[in-house]
Length: 288
Length: 305
Image 1 (cartoon, chains in turn orange, red):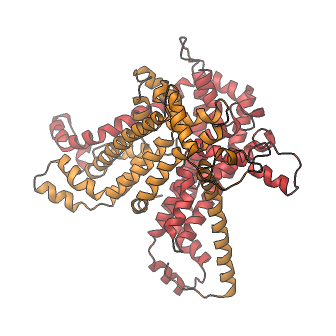
Image 2: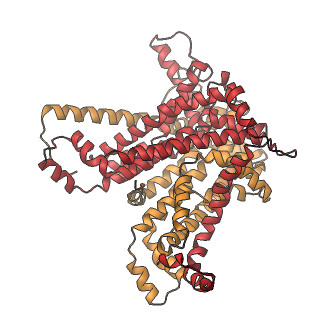
Image 3: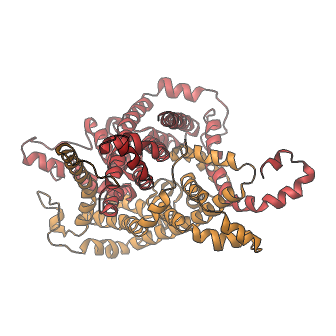
């Protein structure tokens, strides 16, 4: 921000108000997360303390060991759910980055006939509530025989209008000169995509990694419907089972620990990628 | 380049193919998945909504019967619709303005990355994971954080049944959802604001704009209109799709259907009762509603300024 305005009392008061609201808002958004982390480290005595305490006094790793050790005697160990989540998410992230960047590049820089119509459909799809397509998608998945396959969770997640839209907006800002120079030098189209377009798109696909990671990691609805094999269930499903399932003295601790394990990876990946995300988001937006 | 296709004749097919085949091949993976899992389902949903398809028996077309039943006889649908509208009308605008306000202020202060993480973190956390925290905060017994505070200050003698009393369920879902809705809108706004050309503020100062709030109204908002629209559409889609937080807080079905949303109703008929025709009618109505609202918002925002 460039301008230095008259610092009269009125505007100073307004800014104090603004900062006050901002700090309140930050407290509102952060407190549940702080509590989540604090609870995960509470020993049994503090979990059932009355009145309950917000912050942990004697942090311990008991809850995590309960979760990882004692549950490992059950049919499906908790670590298996962590692996499942990482496995499915990794495939979705790779597929999304590959399909969206290549498709959007072809759309913008090759514009084959029909591109405009296709892009209009993508913009319209931004307005579909994802749940609207769930039933017919369920029928389609059934009829092409993917019902009890992990592909039923993976393939639809790759077809994200939101991610395609972001990449497309970003590619439009790329200069054509490097691509044309490479073409004159006789480079093949897939070579250009791999060696010239992808490096220039690095911030864009970093953003895609974050978005598709977050959405597939947290996805509850499609694993709930399509994953029937207990050994293939993902973290949010496992967490839901632990949280709503049989009581037992260790449950509150196990819920807190598994909630933290479920939450942490998304926060970490966003923190790491934040700078690149900001760079990409500049080009989002719909021209009215 | 594109005018060449307008006089395209079959004899020119090989030329046409040579020119565009790479483009089509590269677009194919996304285009196929997109059509198969997003476009085709929308078409299929509309068709099925006119049938009595239930996954098991042979189905037949029943005309508008599903819609008639849904609109005229299904009281629970109207409860769900009312809950969803109340929810969307509160969470949509509040989430939208809070995230814009946060982005606008953050853009003018230091440590903006740290603040950005604080505001963005809630929307990247799993709804299921965070509802365990919120269930503690709103727990209906004396252990709940809010009940505990209320009892300590003598405001109430008995714990309030936040997640069981139909009076409070929707409010609890709304508060949690506002917390989670700061997400993508916030990031888009912040990035848009960072991209505004600062020279227009100098020009504005010469023209007599003398505080930040005038600056916001006359200079900043018109500049970031595309971002405002994008945020509005995401807000509409998200606020009409409320489901998992509602189920996590109040269960399904919730007491007296106080936390029942349109998507919960859809889920009930589709995946518990397998009445796909009926569920598709619900989906079609939801689709028309969000689409009309999204389009309306785009139009309203592009006319202003």
